[in-house]
Length: 255
Image (cartoon, helix red, strand yellow):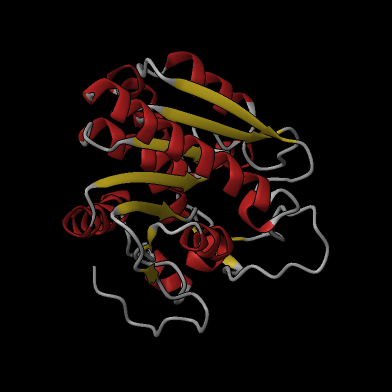
């Protein structure tokens, strides 16, 4: 899709060149790479090559989001993955909220991804259920981001197009059927308190995913946008340990 509006300052995609281990990060619905920049920078501090694309229609204007489809969002991550795969010998993927949903879809299509991490991944969004078959209103007011920490500013829209919500719902509805086909090692991270996506979504993913290597981690002091919340450093350490453990496993199995 072609966007009509400029990118909001601070919402740009980011890339850090590091070693030959790549980490692709996907932000969530109505969010931007700004929401995952802290964890991206910290992954780069650990030496990884990091890319966080900006999903089409995000970080510009909600009129752009109105034109976007979940296929557009997925295609942008595919481009990011292909770029990283050319730069790196091994690629991992991390996705938050809808980014976690897209990460699962990526893992199903690209089983060579060395490992995937979901953070409060979205399979259901109860507050939007009533909108499933609705054609109006055209725009839904967007509430404050679900962040426990005080004084945190997330770049987002004040309105969400109904069309975009329907795209998200279609993506979420199509994802459970893919879980048993996923074989990449997976780390499922959830906040114990999440006012947007029920933590049971992560429990369902963990239970039903086909991966033989899988782990669960819980964030005790963060809400939905955990990558900007009190436990953001906890996420970094969980992901770093997960990545290193998969690299060690690979060395052991190839020895």
